[in-house]
Length: 127
Image (cartoon, rainbow, N blue to C red; front, side, top):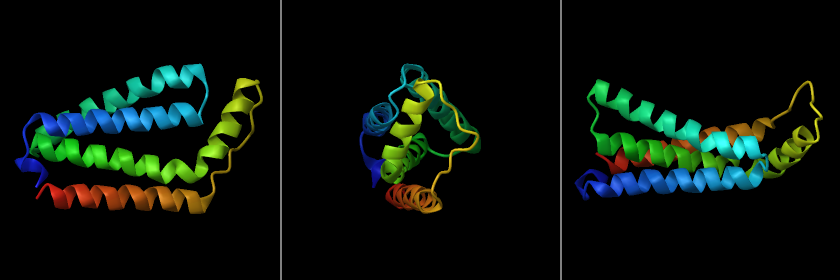
């Protein structure tokens, strides 16, 4: 289904997913260094995913769709932890560091599940 659309739509999907995810993370983690570096890291990861998919023979549309859906799934999955991210970022901004940041296991399970469900949806939509 997604492989039969015009060639620019998977790119628009990928860019939109990147903007939505980076905007959400910038709001949840109000640190200037993070807001500057995070989008760049995801662009590099996206280029790496496209290069890896091309080396394995996967169609570009499928790689872009699965990457985009997984990124949106991660955004949805991190939503319950947004308040913790903000609190931790404010602590770090004040110069306070903890020895350990306890990420709730239920939030981690929700994040992984939402990423897998979204990736499966993308895979089924690109068949």
